[in-house]
Amino acid sequence: MQTVLVSGKNGQLGSELLNAHVSYPQFKFIFLDREEMDLSSQTSIAQAFDKYNPDYFINCGAYTLVDKAETEKDLSEKINGENVGYIAELCKGLNATLIHISTDYVFDGNNKSPYKTDDKTNPVNFYGQTKLQGEQAALAKNDKTIIIRTAWVYSSFGKNFVKTMLRLMNEKEEISVVNDQVGTPTYARDLAIAICEIISSDKKEYGIYHFTNSGIISWFDFAVEIKNLANLNCKVNAIPTSKFPTPAKRPHYSVLDKSKIVEDYGIQLRDWKDSLKECMSYLQPIV
Image (cartoon, rainbow, N blue to C red; front, side, top):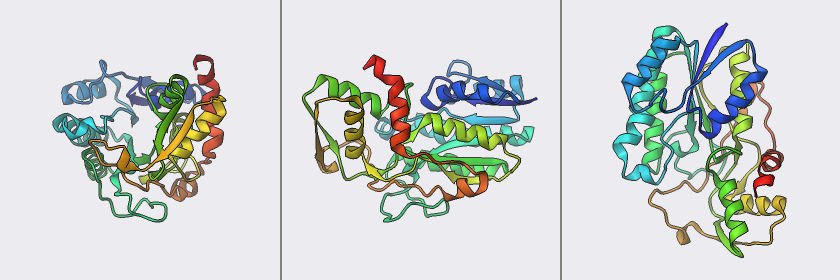
């Protein structure tokens, strides 16, 4: 039985993989949290690899504080960049496949059509730079690497836009959400299942892939749908990004072209509204 080692056990994607993996009993999944595998420490990473000798390593852990990365540069670069290269080296030594999760933030957001996997990268913030560094290091150091870029991830686990909107809409009579940043949400459960399908596949295609749900919306559109599904009365106002400044710049257009992952691995893409509705069904009791 092949061993699948997963970092970031308590994050959104790690938590969803923990739920999804029971449907794939042909693999032995081992999930590690930050205390069991500290992605900022090469010693900790090496100890985990020595202990478990994985056939697959799914790197769900990352430094994801986009604004804080502008000041915590050393830590974000170590976790998202340098140590991803180190993980890839360890995978290479074991002839293991690395599945590494990356982001739409490797692009500058100036496209007018969905970003293809081979489009030119040009991050507009430091977080995006570190994630691109990690991609490049992983691909350079292990031929058996699959990069999955995703965007706007949410889940019934952890902190995310959906939970924040539900909280604010319950607390306030009106809120404002930017309407000039366009992309597609990703339900982490759908991504977890896609990853399990990839490792279960007889095909062995490596390289860069894109995965989100289907559809093209703004954050404002996303918030309005959350409001409607939750039957809340809060008024949602559309505002430009210029009215909501953040330490890290965000790309205005983040839509990813998913055709490659569909063609190579037969992954089915769900409409973002269907996935949101499913996730909200888990959240409603606590709203």
